[in-house]
Image 1 (cartoon, rainbow, N blue to C red):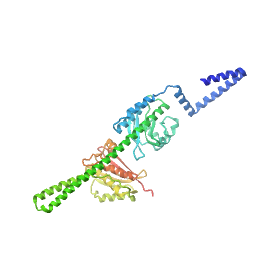
Image 2: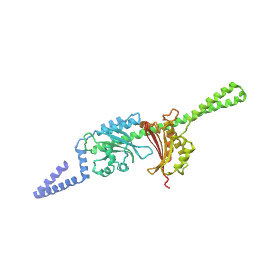
Image 3: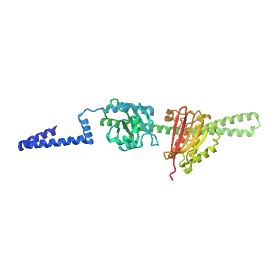
Image 4: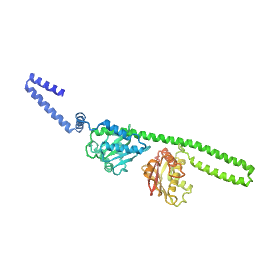
Length: 443
């Protein structure tokens, strides 16, 4: 206003000294300049956006009370007792923040570049895979993707299938510095209102807070896992002490046998003691399954299908009428035979146990997505999605009465050491597919 009044004063002063014609010329010039400026703003998308944002920021009341929104979201996600509760709170917080009809949260799995839907609220088909181009766009631009924004029309066209299936209106990246840890897909709000800079600012702040909470939860889970493994080491020490006592008892029986071997009563007691001690030692040895991780893998090139076929033959498992082997194509890859043997044997035995000897187990070799795979399939009892997500590959988690819960955890560690992946697809009452992926031999 001061600049405006100063300009009027200078214009009046000039007209006083130079005459009214000068004032008319200046007025005409300013009129044309103003009209040209308005036309530039109208026809320039970028300037129009900047003008609208400037006006909204400086001449209108703010849409959100950011302090109140941040406090509400922080309170919602804090003090959650489990990772699942945290994900529920994050999804609900974003949904409520902009009054979206639905929301889906996608996260990148540890050691994997694929994104999985981990939480869905009122959305359709969360199992569809996001396009690589969409992931690259979010990672490179770090933008909140508005599907109605003309600037994003190219990527919206490329990812049209994913956007339509999830009914996406906004896609909010979850960034850890330059790493895209995940993203949220938000459906249109109840009022179908256009989003502006305030919505984007709010969502960016909430996404930073959500990402910090997720990272903290994952670090806590890793710390807990490390403590469990440490506890396993201590437990092994105690059990070794018990084994030492058991062997000492057997040693005493041998010593006494030299003197009392002809005594029938001693013979009966000795046999009973040896039998009891033997059973105890077997039980303890079964529990002393370690989590071996060799300092280095002994990798060598080999035909994966041929090796597994030989392995099954050596184990005499071909005599099982429910077990079959099928090789779709030769798979040449580089792997540690000793370590991969542990994985294959464990998967086959698990499959046979799940069918209780009454079902079918199939081992299939082939290639997929530039990787070799071994798929062990069964038509056994299957597993729930909750068990797979929360417990399957966690140490000391098992559904077996005599299991220690470290077999699949060990398998996963071995496969990841080979730069591979171990995945599972299972449905209760139908069966399970465990799929081991190994990089193909490119040489």
